[in-house]
Length: 69
Image 1 (cartoon, rainbow, N blue to C red):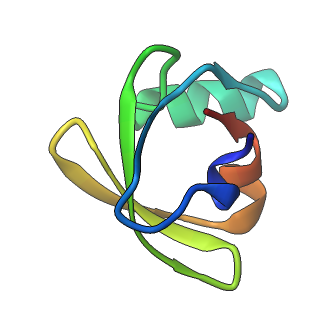
Image 2: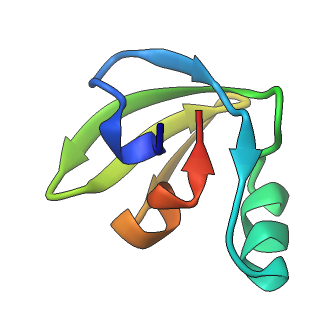
């Protein structure tokens, strides 16, 4: 399921990062790699704030839909 469907305060393992190569590289540079753990801290209208590798990152709905957990 895409990251936008994960419940708040829930931790999931990233299975796949989709999208164009440019988008994948951008997300992987922020730590969104297959096998990594991501915790959804808050959600608002599809946009999410997550905790990954000790950092808090806000990403938009379009990007979050490309991250499969």
